Length: 201
Image 1 (tube, rainbow, N blue to C red):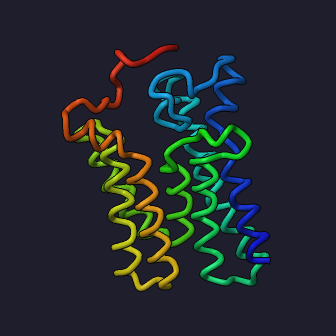
Image 2 (tube, rainbow, N blue to C red; image 1 turned 90 degrees about the vertical axis):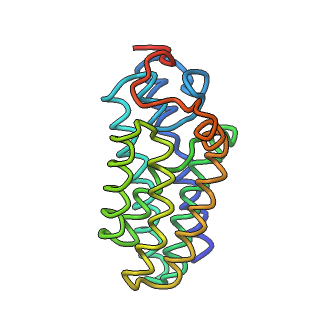
């Protein structure tokens, strides 16, 4: 049942709401516009606030749904529960339904973080929002979120499986944000609200 729950989690994560919503409302492949990323931030750049908020909520819900199903299937096994969040993020990043070209996993990470600990989620989310508000760099806020999360989960004395899994998803995030990190260091990173990179809407 553990393996089944992880397969289900990966498949749930592989549902690319950014791709589906952009196809539905604009007839485009979101991966061919803006930054080329299938996620909420690029949806904001290309299609605007409404679709971006919808993508953000649905992508976050994937993480929670995957973990909830795993909890039911495994009788609350904390390792299976934690790992299912990681599989959901892997599905989002490398979706089997969309040629393994997905997003960077931050919205889904928000859902997983909420599943680990509402307080840790709140701490990470607040710091991320403050960072984005000050710098207008969504990527920097995202990296702050995944960096703070393992520390907050550890301090809050959550199961070790949650701590180690949150460290793994942080590694995922840093790998997926490699180009963003390079751009941040070079001063070339796109800022939130920069219309010079917007293609539609």
